[in-house]
Length: 423
Image (tube, rainbow, N blue to C red; front, side, top):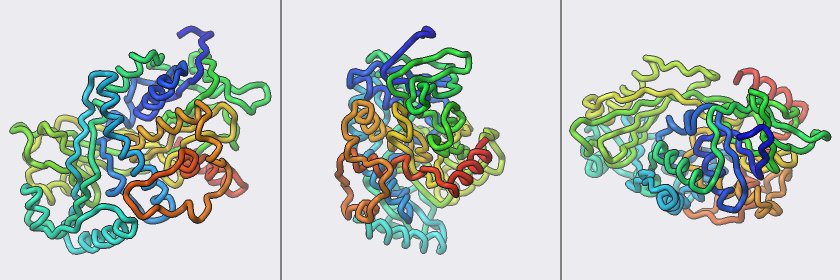
């Protein structure tokens, strides 16, 4: 890539989000360059377990319901997204549609599961209450002490490493310029300071662009060149995760198993992913004995067969989190600058939807309805009482608009303190 290169779209970040939207933009006819600070998917994407679990992860409050709206829409897109990647790259991304179990080990956890059941039923989500014996009928390897479980038939999983391989192949086949080891120092602005015109790399190289997308995950806030009113607070959230293997092959667990403090995701070939801690420790990447012990202890109490699995890998990743842990997708305060960051634990789940939304923004479609800067109306804050949620792109963009972090005197101080803690 020469110093004088100019593309329609320059993307900072080569994880699942950055690569997905680059592929989508290129398929719409735009010239695209992806600038990745390390290697493609080297950050949180490579470490992720790959759960597609909007129902399992729904939380109380407005932010949780906004995430549910996005998650249900994106989960419905995954089968076609996976098929498209296979056609474009020849890589099967390991989409397993076997459902999820949420399990309780004791009375306290069972009471909490009952509360979670009520929440999901109030939102019209598909979930079934199971006694311990019924859960063991579905997954015989579960411990006899399991008190209660919830079955979520529509929460599935993919293998993020296969997704990354497929995206790399699909992007290269379509002509996306993917550059690894390209550390972005900042966003370049025009003379007025009101429009993004490209990205400046740490080695001094400039990549000019008609539009710039920031999809750098936990490192988004380290990209300079933006004034305070144009920035979005994104912090790193540490997660430790284990990859395990059953030497006797598959069969220990068929469904994704979720429990208080973690999850176990089967790959279908005797490999399992056990995760993950949630730690506010800045950019610390050290694995700890305590973190590993807690994951293994909690999993063993529900699935004793975990003790026979071999440890293949211990990884640490940094999720990108915003103050409300919901993503920022769409345009912000500057012309030519588009955000696709802050996906926290939902980057893999939200990749197809983020790609579609950002491609629409870049192409200039679907934005008129977004009404950036307008507060959400009451009716927009509620989830439609059915599993499948429809809506125009503009309404979805409003859900994750950067405007919710628009600075005021109070929020300026909060953003400043958040940024300092992240660094």
